[in-house]
Image (cartoon, rainbow, N blue to C red; front, side, top):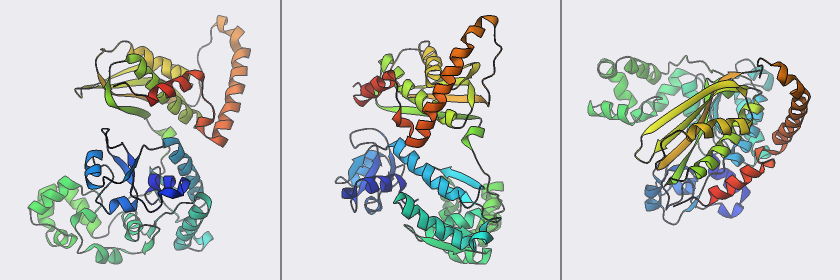
Length: 389
């Protein structure tokens, strides 16, 4: 997707079109840029840049906090479009992924036709644009997707075309070469892909196995398969909240935990799974980080996740906190537990609660997670709007 978060905001508020829009922290807050419009990029603003640096470069930009629920809703619709063409999808983020269409391309008229159909449907059904790259490998498809941004389409069908395209570009064009690796190569006189291929022995001496992988990629060799990934199959999932000011009020921290628990609960309920282990993460103002975990019966409700995390928070040292988070692990597809005789009277009540929960979940699937909130969650949201100084 093209400048995804910013594009969603422009779609929903056309007055932002053509303006330098920066999504992330606000200029007076601590934080970074999540993404920005192409107009903001002309000023040098980039993702992951300090918000202070972004403001220095673009003081007249429009700064907005991200709206996670809105972006996830758009992402789910985009993923539905992708799934129309293959189920072999490796999701990289909310708005990016690799699709292996080897087995389905012929049905749609070829891989290029699949790419063009995805572009067309994305525009029509979401009001957003995307850039599609078609390649013979993950590396070539990734590079192709970036060649004509925004709203681009590009094809790289063989290693010869790939290497010819990148031969005289900087080493950072190679997947896996970050700032530190690039600096190490440049300090050895290796600045371009051509330099890599002309100095293979030096690259291996400098970087070992990583160097061999870099040489392969520079030659267009990439046999990595597209690996479908589903969060429900992950060993753990987590959400966290970083505060703009250090927090000493632990009741306020519990408000944050309540909202994190709601988000995690919705995720695992949507996936039809339960968690046995809840982990609390706390980062203090001095950057010291601690975690506490509790394992027990299978749970999935926001209330149970929150209560478990809050009980652990009560037992940690009370001093200024910069970040809190909740992690879930130990997943199962059943909430089976050993039932005592005394529990039998509650079976019918539990069945009614399960029936109600299923109905509420269906409403959330249809209209979004924000459609239903408890009174405690609404109070927590209100308190979170006015963060303590």
